[in-house]
Image 1: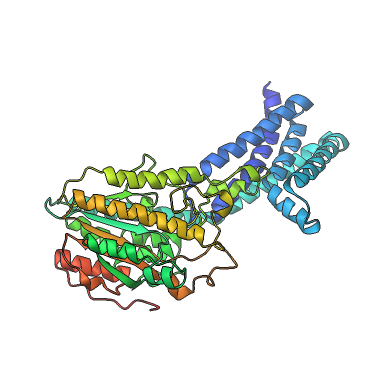
Image 2 (image 1 turned 90 degrees about the horizontal axis):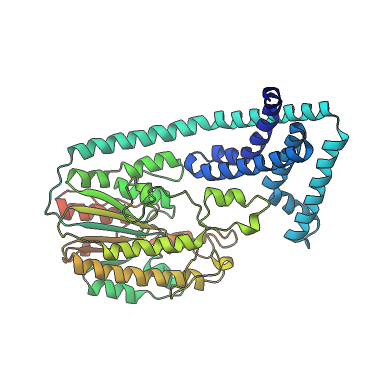
Length: 480
Protein backbone atom coordinates (compact mmCIF):
# COMPACT_ATOMS: atom_id res chain seq x y z
CA UNK A 1 0.00 0.00 0.00
CA UNK A 2 2.84 2.38 0.89
CA UNK A 3 4.53 1.56 -2.40
CA UNK A 4 1.33 2.29 -4.33
CA UNK A 5 0.89 5.60 -2.51
CA UNK A 6 4.45 6.59 -3.36
CA UNK A 7 3.88 5.69 -7.00
CA UNK A 8 0.74 7.84 -7.08
CA UNK A 9 2.25 10.86 -5.31
CA UNK A 10 3.76 12.39 -8.43
CA UNK A 11 0.74 11.76 -10.72
CA UNK A 12 -1.53 13.23 -8.05
CA UNK A 13 0.72 16.27 -7.70
CA UNK A 14 0.72 16.75 -11.48
CA UNK A 15 -3.09 16.85 -11.60
CA UNK A 16 -3.25 19.28 -8.68
CA UNK A 17 -0.67 21.62 -10.22
CA UNK A 18 -2.47 21.63 -13.58
CA UNK A 19 -5.85 22.15 -11.87
CA UNK A 20 -4.89 25.10 -9.65
CA UNK A 21 -2.48 26.84 -12.01
CA UNK A 22 -5.14 29.04 -13.74
CA UNK A 23 -6.36 30.24 -10.32
CA UNK A 24 -2.88 30.96 -8.99
CA UNK A 25 -1.79 32.62 -12.24
CA UNK A 26 -4.78 35.00 -12.16
CA UNK A 27 -4.19 35.76 -8.49
CA UNK A 28 -0.43 36.32 -8.77
CA UNK A 29 -0.82 38.63 -11.77
CA UNK A 30 -3.46 40.65 -9.89
CA UNK A 31 -2.11 40.34 -6.33
CA UNK A 32 -2.20 44.10 -5.88
CA UNK A 33 -5.90 44.26 -6.77
CA UNK A 34 -7.39 41.23 -5.01
CA UNK A 35 -6.97 39.45 -1.70
CA UNK A 36 -5.94 35.81 -1.48
CA UNK A 37 -9.26 35.13 0.25
CA UNK A 38 -10.94 35.86 -3.12
CA UNK A 39 -9.01 32.95 -4.65
CA UNK A 40 -9.80 30.40 -1.93
CA UNK A 41 -13.17 29.26 -3.26
CA UNK A 42 -12.05 28.77 -6.90
CA UNK A 43 -8.89 27.01 -5.66
CA UNK A 44 -11.07 24.54 -3.78
CA UNK A 45 -13.42 24.05 -6.76
CA UNK A 46 -10.65 23.52 -9.33
CA UNK A 47 -8.75 21.19 -7.00
CA UNK A 48 -11.86 19.15 -6.23
CA UNK A 49 -12.77 18.82 -9.91
CA UNK A 50 -9.25 17.74 -10.89
CA UNK A 51 -9.09 15.22 -8.06
CA UNK A 52 -12.55 13.86 -8.89
CA UNK A 53 -11.55 13.21 -12.52
CA UNK A 54 -8.27 11.70 -11.33
CA UNK A 55 -9.86 9.21 -8.90
CA UNK A 56 -12.66 8.23 -11.30
CA UNK A 57 -10.07 7.61 -14.01
CA UNK A 58 -7.91 5.67 -11.55
CA UNK A 59 -10.81 3.36 -10.69
CA UNK A 60 -11.57 2.85 -14.40
CA UNK A 61 -7.99 2.36 -15.65
CA UNK A 62 -6.39 0.94 -12.47
CA UNK A 63 -3.37 3.11 -13.25
CA UNK A 64 -2.57 6.32 -11.40
CA UNK A 65 -0.28 7.39 -14.26
CA UNK A 66 -3.07 7.03 -16.81
CA UNK A 67 -5.44 8.75 -14.39
CA UNK A 68 -3.04 11.69 -14.11
CA UNK A 69 -2.90 12.01 -17.92
CA UNK A 70 -6.69 11.91 -18.19
CA UNK A 71 -7.18 14.36 -15.33
CA UNK A 72 -4.51 16.74 -16.58
CA UNK A 73 -5.76 16.82 -20.17
CA UNK A 74 -9.35 17.30 -19.01
CA UNK A 75 -8.42 20.22 -16.70
CA UNK A 76 -6.39 21.91 -19.45
CA UNK A 77 -9.40 21.79 -21.77
CA UNK A 78 -11.82 22.73 -18.97
CA UNK A 79 -9.79 25.79 -17.87
CA UNK A 80 -9.13 27.10 -21.38
CA UNK A 81 -12.41 26.27 -23.10
CA UNK A 82 -13.43 29.89 -23.83
CA UNK A 83 -10.08 30.57 -25.51
CA UNK A 84 -10.42 27.46 -27.67
CA UNK A 85 -13.99 28.38 -28.52
CA UNK A 86 -12.97 31.88 -29.66
CA UNK A 87 -10.31 30.37 -31.91
CA UNK A 88 -12.82 28.00 -33.47
CA UNK A 89 -15.30 30.82 -34.08
CA UNK A 90 -12.65 32.83 -35.88
CA UNK A 91 -12.46 30.00 -38.41
CA UNK A 92 -16.19 29.19 -38.41
CA UNK A 93 -18.22 32.18 -37.09
CA UNK A 94 -21.51 30.26 -37.33
CA UNK A 95 -20.47 27.86 -34.56
CA UNK A 96 -22.28 28.07 -31.24
CA UNK A 97 -21.33 26.99 -27.73
CA UNK A 98 -22.86 23.53 -28.00
CA UNK A 99 -21.17 22.88 -31.35
CA UNK A 100 -17.79 23.88 -29.91
CA UNK A 101 -18.38 21.83 -26.76
CA UNK A 102 -19.17 18.69 -28.77
CA UNK A 103 -16.11 19.16 -31.02
CA UNK A 104 -13.78 19.81 -28.10
CA UNK A 105 -15.09 16.82 -26.13
CA UNK A 106 -14.50 14.56 -29.15
CA UNK A 107 -10.96 15.92 -29.55
CA UNK A 108 -10.42 15.52 -25.82
CA UNK A 109 -11.57 11.89 -25.92
CA UNK A 110 -9.27 11.09 -28.83
CA UNK A 111 -6.31 12.70 -27.10
CA UNK A 112 -6.94 10.68 -23.96
CA UNK A 113 -7.20 7.45 -25.96
CA UNK A 114 -4.00 8.36 -27.81
CA UNK A 115 -2.10 8.95 -24.61
CA UNK A 116 -3.47 6.02 -22.66
CA UNK A 117 -3.44 3.31 -25.32
CA UNK A 118 -0.76 4.29 -27.80
CA UNK A 119 1.99 5.65 -25.56
CA UNK A 120 3.96 3.12 -23.49
CA UNK A 121 3.85 3.21 -19.69
CA UNK A 122 7.35 4.67 -19.46
CA UNK A 123 6.32 7.42 -21.87
CA UNK A 124 3.29 8.20 -19.71
CA UNK A 125 5.47 8.41 -16.60
CA UNK A 126 7.87 10.70 -18.44
CA UNK A 127 4.93 12.94 -19.51
CA UNK A 128 3.67 13.14 -15.91
CA UNK A 129 7.15 14.09 -14.67
CA UNK A 130 7.43 16.81 -17.33
CA UNK A 131 4.00 18.18 -16.38
CA UNK A 132 5.00 18.31 -12.72
CA UNK A 133 8.21 20.12 -13.57
CA UNK A 134 6.67 22.61 -16.02
CA UNK A 135 3.63 23.59 -13.95
CA UNK A 136 5.65 23.56 -10.73
CA UNK A 137 8.25 25.90 -12.20
CA UNK A 138 5.57 28.17 -13.71
CA UNK A 139 3.77 28.38 -10.36
CA UNK A 140 6.98 29.21 -8.48
CA UNK A 141 8.00 31.80 -11.10
CA UNK A 142 4.64 33.56 -10.88
CA UNK A 143 4.80 33.48 -7.09
CA UNK A 144 8.30 34.96 -7.04
CA UNK A 145 7.23 37.73 -9.42
CA UNK A 146 4.23 38.52 -7.20
CA UNK A 147 6.17 38.56 -3.91
CA UNK A 148 7.21 42.25 -4.11
CA UNK A 149 3.61 43.28 -4.80
CA UNK A 150 2.23 41.10 -2.00
CA UNK A 151 4.91 42.31 0.43
CA UNK A 152 4.26 45.95 -0.44
CA UNK A 153 0.52 45.41 -0.02
CA UNK A 154 0.94 43.73 3.39
CA UNK A 155 3.36 46.43 4.58
CA UNK A 156 0.95 49.18 3.54
CA UNK A 157 -1.96 47.46 5.31
CA UNK A 158 0.14 46.99 8.43
CA UNK A 159 1.20 50.63 8.45
CA UNK A 160 -2.38 51.84 8.08
CA UNK A 161 -3.50 49.50 10.87
CA UNK A 162 -0.76 50.65 13.23
CA UNK A 163 -1.43 54.34 12.63
CA UNK A 164 -5.18 53.86 13.04
CA UNK A 165 -4.69 51.98 16.29
CA UNK A 166 -2.43 54.75 17.54
CA UNK A 167 -5.06 57.36 16.79
CA UNK A 168 -7.79 55.22 18.33
CA UNK A 169 -5.78 54.90 21.54
CA UNK A 170 -5.59 58.69 21.70
CA UNK A 171 -9.26 59.18 20.88
CA UNK A 172 -11.32 60.63 23.72
CA UNK A 173 -14.82 60.60 22.33
CA UNK A 174 -16.55 63.90 22.89
CA UNK A 175 -20.29 63.41 23.12
CA UNK A 176 -22.17 66.48 22.00
CA UNK A 177 -20.80 66.93 18.50
CA UNK A 178 -23.20 66.46 15.57
CA UNK A 179 -23.26 63.08 13.88
CA UNK A 180 -21.79 63.10 10.37
CA UNK A 181 -23.16 60.94 7.55
CA UNK A 182 -21.05 60.86 4.40
CA UNK A 183 -22.58 59.31 1.28
CA UNK A 184 -20.76 58.68 -2.00
CA UNK A 185 -23.02 57.44 -4.79
CA UNK A 186 -20.66 55.89 -7.32
CA UNK A 187 -21.18 57.12 -10.89
CA UNK A 188 -24.14 59.35 -9.96
CA UNK A 189 -24.05 62.01 -12.67
CA UNK A 190 -23.99 65.67 -11.70
CA UNK A 191 -26.94 67.90 -12.60
CA UNK A 192 -25.28 69.50 -15.63
CA UNK A 193 -24.06 66.25 -17.19
CA UNK A 194 -27.26 64.30 -16.73
CA UNK A 195 -29.26 67.11 -18.33
CA UNK A 196 -26.99 68.31 -21.11
CA UNK A 197 -25.39 64.99 -22.12
CA UNK A 198 -27.85 62.30 -21.04
CA UNK A 199 -31.07 64.25 -21.60
CA UNK A 200 -32.63 63.92 -18.15
CA UNK A 201 -33.52 66.89 -15.93
CA UNK A 202 -32.80 66.03 -12.30
CA UNK A 203 -33.71 69.48 -11.01
CA UNK A 204 -36.67 68.16 -8.94
CA UNK A 205 -34.18 66.22 -6.80
CA UNK A 206 -32.09 69.36 -6.24
CA UNK A 207 -35.22 71.32 -5.30
CA UNK A 208 -36.31 68.60 -2.90
CA UNK A 209 -32.93 68.55 -1.16
CA UNK A 210 -33.03 72.33 -0.80
CA UNK A 211 -36.55 72.15 0.62
CA UNK A 212 -35.34 69.94 3.49
CA UNK A 213 -32.33 72.12 4.30
CA UNK A 214 -29.51 71.01 1.99
CA UNK A 215 -27.16 73.33 0.16
CA UNK A 216 -26.90 72.00 -3.38
CA UNK A 217 -24.18 72.77 -5.92
CA UNK A 218 -25.30 72.00 -9.45
CA UNK A 219 -21.96 72.73 -11.09
CA UNK A 220 -19.38 70.96 -8.90
CA UNK A 221 -16.56 69.14 -10.67
CA UNK A 222 -13.89 66.75 -9.40
CA UNK A 223 -10.37 66.40 -10.77
CA UNK A 224 -11.07 63.22 -12.72
CA UNK A 225 -13.28 60.17 -13.19
CA UNK A 226 -11.14 57.47 -11.55
CA UNK A 227 -12.89 56.35 -8.37
CA UNK A 228 -9.73 55.06 -6.69
CA UNK A 229 -7.90 58.36 -7.28
CA UNK A 230 -10.86 60.63 -6.46
CA UNK A 231 -11.64 58.88 -3.17
CA UNK A 232 -7.96 58.85 -2.16
CA UNK A 233 -7.85 62.62 -2.70
CA UNK A 234 -11.11 63.14 -0.81
CA UNK A 235 -9.80 61.31 2.22
CA UNK A 236 -6.45 63.14 1.93
CA UNK A 237 -8.18 66.55 1.71
CA UNK A 238 -5.79 67.48 -1.08
CA UNK A 239 -4.80 66.44 -4.58
CA UNK A 240 -1.97 64.02 -3.89
CA UNK A 241 -3.23 60.93 -5.75
CA UNK A 242 -3.00 60.37 -9.49
CA UNK A 243 -3.63 57.71 -12.13
CA UNK A 244 -0.01 56.53 -12.10
CA UNK A 245 -0.21 55.27 -8.51
CA UNK A 246 -0.76 51.60 -7.69
CA UNK A 247 -3.60 50.19 -5.64
CA UNK A 248 -1.56 49.84 -2.45
CA UNK A 249 -0.48 53.46 -2.53
CA UNK A 250 -4.01 54.67 -3.20
CA UNK A 251 -5.42 52.43 -0.46
CA UNK A 252 -2.97 53.84 2.04
CA UNK A 253 -3.86 57.43 1.11
CA UNK A 254 -7.55 56.64 1.40
CA UNK A 255 -7.43 54.69 4.67
CA UNK A 256 -4.86 56.86 6.40
CA UNK A 257 -5.85 60.24 4.99
CA UNK A 258 -6.22 63.50 6.85
CA UNK A 259 -10.04 63.53 6.76
CA UNK A 260 -10.68 60.38 8.80
CA UNK A 261 -7.68 61.06 11.05
CA UNK A 262 -8.94 64.56 11.87
CA UNK A 263 -12.34 63.13 12.80
CA UNK A 264 -10.64 60.61 15.09
CA UNK A 265 -8.67 63.40 16.76
CA UNK A 266 -11.89 65.33 17.26
CA UNK A 267 -13.37 62.39 19.17
CA UNK A 268 -15.55 60.83 16.47
CA UNK A 269 -16.24 57.10 16.27
CA UNK A 270 -15.83 55.89 12.68
CA UNK A 271 -18.01 53.27 11.03
CA UNK A 272 -18.91 52.17 7.51
CA UNK A 273 -22.03 51.08 5.67
CA UNK A 274 -22.39 49.73 2.16
CA UNK A 275 -20.38 47.22 0.16
CA UNK A 276 -17.33 49.46 -0.30
CA UNK A 277 -16.74 50.32 3.37
CA UNK A 278 -13.63 48.16 3.28
CA UNK A 279 -11.82 50.44 0.81
CA UNK A 280 -11.79 53.10 3.54
CA UNK A 281 -10.57 50.64 6.15
CA UNK A 282 -13.88 50.86 8.03
CA UNK A 283 -15.93 48.11 9.63
CA UNK A 284 -19.22 47.54 7.91
CA UNK A 285 -22.24 47.96 10.15
CA UNK A 286 -24.98 46.81 7.77
CA UNK A 287 -23.79 43.32 6.84
CA UNK A 288 -22.18 40.36 8.55
CA UNK A 289 -19.63 40.07 5.74
CA UNK A 290 -16.91 42.55 6.59
CA UNK A 291 -14.75 41.86 3.55
CA UNK A 292 -16.28 42.31 0.12
CA UNK A 293 -14.58 40.67 -2.89
CA UNK A 294 -12.87 43.05 -5.29
CA UNK A 295 -14.89 43.63 -8.44
CA UNK A 296 -14.56 45.11 -11.90
CA UNK A 297 -16.69 47.98 -13.15
CA UNK A 298 -19.10 45.39 -14.55
CA UNK A 299 -19.57 43.82 -11.13
CA UNK A 300 -17.43 40.75 -11.86
CA UNK A 301 -15.49 39.19 -9.02
CA UNK A 302 -12.27 37.18 -9.22
CA UNK A 303 -14.35 34.00 -9.39
CA UNK A 304 -16.57 35.37 -12.16
CA UNK A 305 -13.56 36.27 -14.33
CA UNK A 306 -11.95 32.89 -13.74
CA UNK A 307 -15.03 30.81 -14.57
CA UNK A 308 -15.68 32.94 -17.67
CA UNK A 309 -12.76 31.10 -19.30
CA UNK A 310 -13.96 27.61 -18.46
CA UNK A 311 -16.16 24.99 -20.07
CA UNK A 312 -19.12 26.02 -17.92
CA UNK A 313 -18.95 29.76 -18.62
CA UNK A 314 -22.54 30.03 -20.01
CA UNK A 315 -23.85 28.89 -16.62
CA UNK A 316 -21.67 31.15 -14.50
CA UNK A 317 -23.03 34.67 -14.02
CA UNK A 318 -22.44 37.60 -11.75
CA UNK A 319 -24.62 37.12 -8.69
CA UNK A 320 -26.74 40.18 -9.34
CA UNK A 321 -29.54 39.05 -7.04
CA UNK A 322 -27.11 39.20 -4.14
CA UNK A 323 -25.93 42.64 -5.23
CA UNK A 324 -29.50 43.89 -5.45
CA UNK A 325 -30.24 42.63 -1.96
CA UNK A 326 -27.02 44.15 -0.65
CA UNK A 327 -27.87 47.62 -1.95
CA UNK A 328 -31.40 47.48 -0.57
CA UNK A 329 -30.11 46.13 2.75
CA UNK A 330 -27.84 49.13 3.16
CA UNK A 331 -30.68 51.57 2.56
CA UNK A 332 -32.97 49.67 4.93
CA UNK A 333 -30.27 49.55 7.59
CA UNK A 334 -29.68 53.29 7.47
CA UNK A 335 -33.42 54.00 7.52
CA UNK A 336 -33.94 51.82 10.60
CA UNK A 337 -30.72 52.84 12.36
CA UNK A 338 -31.27 53.81 15.98
CA UNK A 339 -29.71 57.27 16.12
CA UNK A 340 -28.66 59.28 19.16
CA UNK A 341 -28.33 62.90 18.02
CA UNK A 342 -25.05 64.67 18.78
CA UNK A 343 -23.27 61.42 19.59
CA UNK A 344 -20.05 62.22 17.69
CA UNK A 345 -20.71 59.37 15.26
CA UNK A 346 -19.37 59.28 11.70
CA UNK A 347 -20.78 56.82 9.15
CA UNK A 348 -19.19 56.54 5.71
CA UNK A 349 -21.38 54.98 3.02
CA UNK A 350 -19.96 54.31 -0.44
CA UNK A 351 -22.67 52.83 -2.63
CA UNK A 352 -21.67 51.25 -5.96
CA UNK A 353 -24.93 52.66 -7.23
CA UNK A 354 -26.11 53.81 -9.78
CA UNK A 355 -22.80 52.42 -11.07
CA UNK A 356 -23.22 49.51 -13.46
CA UNK A 357 -24.17 46.69 -13.54
CA UNK A 358 -27.68 48.03 -14.06
CA UNK A 359 -29.68 45.93 -11.63
CA UNK A 360 -32.85 48.01 -11.28
CA UNK A 361 -35.16 49.91 -13.58
CA UNK A 362 -36.64 53.21 -12.42
CA UNK A 363 -39.31 51.35 -10.44
CA UNK A 364 -36.89 49.01 -8.70
CA UNK A 365 -37.67 45.99 -10.85
CA UNK A 366 -34.79 43.73 -12.00
CA UNK A 367 -33.04 44.35 -15.32
CA UNK A 368 -32.34 41.38 -17.57
CA UNK A 369 -28.77 40.09 -17.58
CA UNK A 370 -28.07 41.03 -21.20
CA UNK A 371 -28.83 44.70 -20.46
CA UNK A 372 -26.92 45.09 -17.21
CA UNK A 373 -24.00 46.77 -19.00
CA UNK A 374 -26.01 48.22 -21.91
CA UNK A 375 -24.79 51.78 -22.45
CA UNK A 376 -26.15 52.01 -25.99
CA UNK A 377 -29.66 52.32 -24.59
CA UNK A 378 -29.51 55.05 -21.92
CA UNK A 379 -32.76 54.01 -20.30
CA UNK A 380 -30.86 51.34 -18.35
CA UNK A 381 -28.40 53.75 -16.74
CA UNK A 382 -31.08 56.41 -16.30
CA UNK A 383 -33.53 53.87 -14.86
CA UNK A 384 -31.06 52.88 -12.15
CA UNK A 385 -30.12 56.56 -11.71
CA UNK A 386 -33.76 57.48 -11.08
CA UNK A 387 -34.25 54.59 -8.67
CA UNK A 388 -31.13 55.50 -6.71
CA UNK A 389 -32.43 59.08 -6.55
CA UNK A 390 -35.71 57.85 -5.13
CA UNK A 391 -34.08 55.67 -2.47
CA UNK A 392 -31.59 58.38 -1.52
CA UNK A 393 -34.26 61.07 -1.35
CA UNK A 394 -36.35 58.94 1.02
CA UNK A 395 -33.32 58.14 3.16
CA UNK A 396 -32.39 61.81 3.55
CA UNK A 397 -35.87 62.59 4.85
CA UNK A 398 -35.76 59.71 7.33
CA UNK A 399 -32.33 60.66 8.66
CA UNK A 400 -33.26 64.30 9.13
CA UNK A 401 -36.39 63.39 11.06
CA UNK A 402 -34.32 61.27 13.42
CA UNK A 403 -31.28 63.51 13.61
CA UNK A 404 -32.03 67.13 12.62
CA UNK A 405 -28.77 68.36 14.14
CA UNK A 406 -26.69 66.06 11.93
CA UNK A 407 -24.31 66.91 9.14
CA UNK A 408 -24.95 65.03 5.89
CA UNK A 409 -22.54 65.07 2.94
CA UNK A 410 -24.06 63.74 -0.26
CA UNK A 411 -21.65 63.41 -3.18
CA UNK A 412 -20.65 61.29 -6.14
CA UNK A 413 -17.14 60.53 -7.33
CA UNK A 414 -17.87 61.17 -11.01
CA UNK A 415 -20.65 61.11 -13.58
CA UNK A 416 -21.54 58.29 -15.96
CA UNK A 417 -18.57 57.01 -17.97
CA UNK A 418 -19.69 54.03 -20.09
CA UNK A 419 -16.33 52.57 -19.10
CA UNK A 420 -17.26 48.96 -19.89
CA UNK A 421 -18.27 49.75 -23.49
CA UNK A 422 -15.17 49.99 -25.69
CA UNK A 423 -17.15 51.69 -28.46
CA UNK A 424 -18.73 54.38 -26.28
CA UNK A 425 -16.19 55.11 -23.54
CA UNK A 426 -15.01 58.76 -23.78
CA UNK A 427 -17.51 59.28 -26.63
CA UNK A 428 -20.95 58.99 -25.04
CA UNK A 429 -19.90 61.24 -22.16
CA UNK A 430 -16.95 63.56 -22.92
CA UNK A 431 -14.14 63.36 -20.31
CA UNK A 432 -14.85 66.84 -18.94
CA UNK A 433 -18.50 65.97 -18.33
CA UNK A 434 -17.51 62.82 -16.46
CA UNK A 435 -16.06 65.05 -13.74
CA UNK A 436 -19.40 66.70 -12.90
CA UNK A 437 -20.56 65.41 -9.50
CA UNK A 438 -23.48 65.38 -7.15
CA UNK A 439 -22.53 67.73 -4.29
CA UNK A 440 -24.95 68.60 -1.50
CA UNK A 441 -24.47 69.28 2.22
CA UNK A 442 -26.88 69.51 5.12
CA UNK A 443 -25.18 71.37 7.96
CA UNK A 444 -27.32 71.04 11.09
CA UNK A 445 -30.08 73.08 9.49
CA UNK A 446 -27.79 76.04 8.75
CA UNK A 447 -27.24 77.65 5.35
CA UNK A 448 -24.02 76.54 3.69
CA UNK A 449 -23.71 78.49 0.40
CA UNK A 450 -19.90 78.22 0.38
CA UNK A 451 -20.01 74.87 -1.42
CA UNK A 452 -21.34 76.35 -4.67
CA UNK A 453 -19.12 75.30 -7.63
CA UNK A 454 -16.68 73.58 -5.26
CA UNK A 455 -15.09 70.18 -5.82
CA UNK A 456 -15.51 67.30 -3.40
CA UNK A 457 -12.14 67.96 -1.74
CA UNK A 458 -12.80 71.68 -1.29
CA UNK A 459 -16.29 70.98 0.03
CA UNK A 460 -14.81 68.79 2.78
CA UNK A 461 -12.19 71.44 3.61
CA UNK A 462 -14.92 74.11 3.90
CA UNK A 463 -17.01 71.81 6.10
CA UNK A 464 -14.11 71.17 8.49
CA UNK A 465 -13.42 74.90 8.64
CA UNK A 466 -17.01 75.57 9.66
CA UNK A 467 -17.28 72.63 12.07
CA UNK A 468 -13.94 72.76 13.88
CA UNK A 469 -12.54 76.20 13.09
CA UNK A 470 -9.76 75.01 10.81
CA UNK A 471 -8.36 77.37 8.19
CA UNK A 472 -8.05 75.14 5.12
CA UNK A 473 -7.59 77.12 1.91
CA UNK A 474 -9.54 76.48 -1.26
CA UNK A 475 -7.33 74.42 -3.57
CA UNK A 476 -7.00 74.67 -7.31
CA UNK A 477 -8.59 71.59 -8.86
CA UNK A 478 -6.17 69.76 -11.21
CA UNK A 479 -7.42 69.61 -14.77
CA UNK A 480 -10.18 72.14 -14.15
